[in-house]
Each structure stands twice: as C-alpha cells, then as structure tokens.
Image (cartoon, rainbow, N blue to C red; front, top):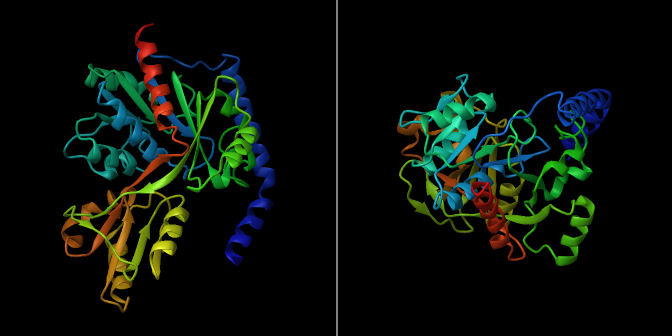
Length: 356
C-alpha cells in the first residue's frame, strides 16, 4: 500500500510533463481532424480493437473473440504492431515464427488460430497492402491496438475501457495512463467496459453509461473476465486445482490484478513473481522461477502463468517439460445477455460493407 501511495505521489509530480503530453496528442489529433494529416481507407472491412490508455484492458481476448466468430464466415486476418519483438517491418507468421520475431500477443493468436494469417508491422499503412498481397483471399482484417494510429481509418472501431480505471476518470501520461484524448472516444462505434464485476447491476450499468456519455450512434457493452481450464504449457494436459493447491504465479502483463483476485478467492495461499509487461524471459529468470518454486514447502503446488506469458516461455520447452507449469486462458463474458447484440453489430458491419 505504501509503494502504491509513493507511486501515485510521484506521478502527480510529473503533471507538467502530462500537460505537455496532452498538448502534443491534442495537436496531432487536430491535424487529423482537419485532414492536414491524412487517413487512408481500404476496400475491405477493417475492425480496430483499441483503448485510450496503456495496456490492461483486455485487447488480446477481444481480438481472439472476434477472430473466433468472424473466421467461420469470412477469411480473416489479424495485424498487430508486434510490440517488443526483435524484428522490424512487416512479418507474416509461419510455422517457424517465435514470440521474439512477431511479439507475444501475435504469437498467441498464431498458436490459437493456425489457419488465420497473423501479421505484424509498425506501419499499418504499409503492412496492410503487404498482407493482402501475401493472402489475397483475405476478406476481413482485425487490427490489434490501432485506435490511436490514425494513418489507417478502420470501418469499425471497438474501444475498450477498464471498469476500475474508466477513461473518464483517468489522466494523461505520465501522471495517468491515458495515451490519447478522452474526447477520442467519439471516434468509436462500439465501447466495451471490460473487467466488470460479474454482479454488476442494471442501475450501475446505467450510471456508467451516463458517465461515458455515448453519442447516439454508439453502443456500450459490459464484460467480465471469464477463466478457462488450466492446461500444461507443454503437454496441454488439463489440470483442475483444489483449494489446497499452492500457486506460484509468474506474470509479465500490464494488469495482473484480476488474476491475483481470482487466486485470492480460489486458493488458500499463493506466491508471485511479477515481471514488466511483455518481459522477455531469460534462462536466469527460469532458474529464479525454479528456485522460488522449490522453496515452497508443500507438495501440492503448481506454477501458473498467462497465455501471453506462456508464449515467451515455450522457447524453454525442454527445461519446463518436467515442471508443473500451467497456463490459464481468459476470455470476455458479456453481461446482461448482450453477446448476441454485440456479435450482430460486428457481422452487420461486415455484411453492410460488402454491399457497398
């Protein structure tokens, strides 16, 4: 608690830099709004998943949700920046790709959907034509984390904002977590409040909608985190822990709070090794994990990590094959029985676009 207080106090001291950051973002957006900076469109449906803040709103599970739904009817591809990869420029994932080459989130998409083209490229304006050249049968592209990158104009923008850190209550970097203007929410067609408490009431829902103040054409949805069955990182074997299973949580994600809360509810005790977001694990890290795990006195114990972290650990397959290292998948669970309405909005956009 003291460290959180210190961090917040330190960030408040950075307010002058936050104001300069806001000014820079405001000028950039104004230049796009006035068409001084140009946005380019493409002749196929582009669906953008993004947020106004840095990390932790559930973009990857939303991309997975969309791909899973859309690929049943349309040839679908994903395009990401490939954050913290060791390569540059456009790369299309193949059987030899690793997280170091394409980034952890694209690698996660590639492993889950091997039949779906997964591409990365810092310049989306350049990467989209290359992707269409490589996969000319592509009918829909899902753009991961592209809301603030306005060189490309998506036809459908899905903006995510976290329930516990709504963009309306946030401030600009480095004092807060916002990397885009609060008013930029007006560019979205769909707004999803993520990581809600499962018991969110209708009254609370309406209060949040009033706070967001959506435009008449905007739809607002609410999701909670749903966890799937744990599976072994190498063998894929499903594991069902009991309340007495002691857990070593290993994570390098932006917001591990929901997972920590789940462990607090489901386990009698757990330990944690926390790394920076998108951390690239080394053999020294693996040795630290082994040592920490070994020091846990009980025999009924496992190591738990996220899918995003797991793709950065599988390079040590030989070393982790004998470890009880399990992965927990996450997905969005729509509240108030509105999943069908959300899916219908996405599919209507694609169908309507194809009729143009």
